[in-house]
Image (tube, rainbow, N blue to C red; front, side, top):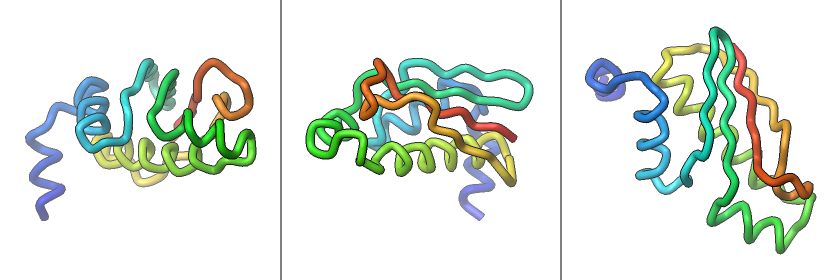
Length: 104
């Protein structure tokens, strides 16, 4: 399987995950915090989330979409079967950043 081969070749650290998300066109992560069982991603500016905020305000579901994408990268490169995703802060709700907490 191509994904399995790729996983063995790539370092499984924050910078690798961030680079892959960025070159895939899903934005740039401003903060990535990792501890034993939890990952936190924060984004302050995003080319899709910002316009969505202006168009739809706090009724936008765009952050859920990006949370799932970021979660998929974490699951693949950290070899996790399950990951609970909580969107704790949101630009659309007047926060300074969007924050997702990913827990094993």
